[in-house]
Image 1: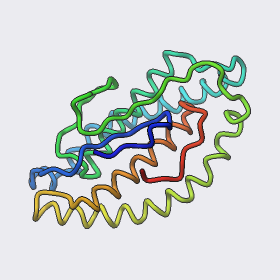
Image 2 (image 1 turned 60 degrees about the vertical axis):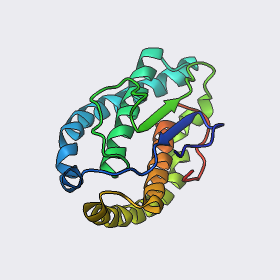
Image 3 (image 1 turned 45 degrees about the horizontal axis):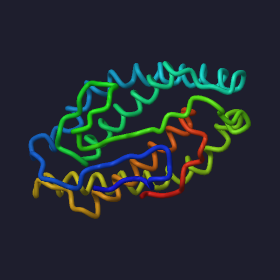
Image 4 (image 1 turned 180 degrees about the vertical axis):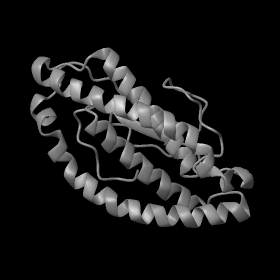
Length: 194
């Protein structure tokens, strides 16, 4: 099992590589479509929530609790679906905003509702630029690794540990940056796959 540094308020844990059904690996993209449709709609709502939260934090210094819970729930769901799509697990993800403690991919966010940093909130989009550039380049490598991992898993029914760890690290980094961009934390995300 690998996870993010314990000190960062957004942690993402993945179980290690395990055998997967070759049939579900072959049809993985098709199997993700129902989740993708629902998450597309939820993602739009999540962006609206982020805009509302941006104004709320700038005006009051607080992130509204209900909106915070919704945004974390959507991010948690995205983490599980992306883990499934990235071949990090063969277990089909649940359609749920709530935590799924037994699922092989787990996202946790330390709640930070009050005493938010208004200055970093105001400039949040600009502060994301370095991460977006680096993640774009890492994303190219991750796409290549994922294609190779897909072929390997078709023949061996498992993603090799090195590929699994790289894909998990890429997803972990991306989720931490997304959490920061969605104003779920004020702590700047580390430039790290771990």
